[in-house]
Image 1: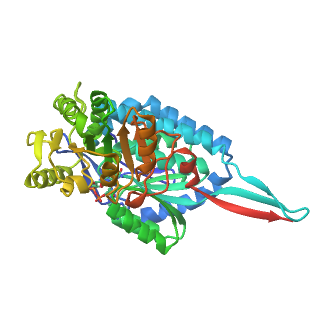
Image 2: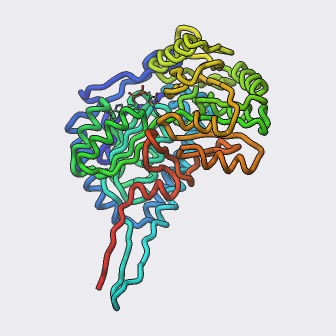
Image 3: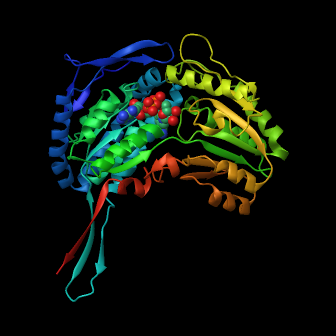
Length: 475
Ligand code: NAD
């Protein structure tokens, strides 16, 4: 069921063939699935040369024709969704329905960008002098290097491939070495759709070595990274050396504010399901729950019931609603957060420990009575931990919610229109869901503020991330 892992460079697939590599592990069993080849320096040089050559071809291809190829790739993704989703479950751990939704949504992202690329207009600004025509045009920025993580093996690359290809850029993608298989199959859809050789290249390797090598090259004009804040800062510094444009989609620590006028059971049902999606390994996962005193007990009760009802297991098993953590590092991290919370007086309402000793399974966890200076309240958990605490006033909760350096996503629940407007304005966050968790769609901007990064993916902003503006004054 697990696919053939290869590099895709200059329109050709490359297998192990003497290359270094690493094993890909199934997090549900801890057993190896396949061997992943690493790109050598010669491979990376070949990818750079291919992407440079292909950029000239692709930018000269009309948006109309680019759109047709992208639509065809998206159709192939939908046709092959079952196989791609199963590969994703095996390597990443999420339950099959989540993997399937990810593949289908990713095809939707490609379709949306394909269409939007056709609407990448410029404008004419009236000149001051007679006979002067002032043109503002948008051009593709050039060769893009993109680095994507293991939590959304198809969706994160799809955002970068969609934006880059729709705007006329070529791309070298280094996807996650821990979850490469589903991405390989997505790239195969583009190859089979007739994408010209070199427009999209897929490589793997030691992340720091690949990124540093690619970013040191003049040919690469844009970096798009999704991952942790420390790595994002490191890459942003490297990009600055060559004045390369960056999109940085980094971590978050999303506050959820439940006001007393909200329906606490309805809010708990909505946000708990969202919390444990992908075992909490989602950058916009709700991670700090502030509930107004009057409805605190009701919210906590319902939320804990939901956590207790989650069926943890292998993502390919029917009925499983939460899979394993993606890797052993997450188990260690969960143990660190929980031990620290307990040490500071935190109470474990449910969960709080690893489940079994094979596979990286961790229990859906709810923690209460935890102080604001506990690790779980300050550092992104990236796991199935939900600290739930009480608050009294609007101003107090806004201060606590905005107190961290993160600013990716935030959520609030209220039935008051004025509170909805006020909290939407007050939260320092790139995205705010008020009575809604629908903050990630192909047509809307997705991205953070503060240390959660800069730049947006999705929406017209996502296309703009791969375009440069040129002004032509024509006498
Ligand atoms: P990590 O910091 O080692 O790596 C994060 C990602 O960056 C991985 O995909 C990794 O392959 C990549 N990476 C690491 N060094 C790199 C380099 N020098 N150049 C290019 N890519 C590099 O952490 P991790 O253990 O893999 O993940 C843990 C943390 O990462 C989480 O706690 C979370 O904060 C963050 N994360 C965020 C997202 C997101 O969607 N924003 C996704 C995955 C992980």
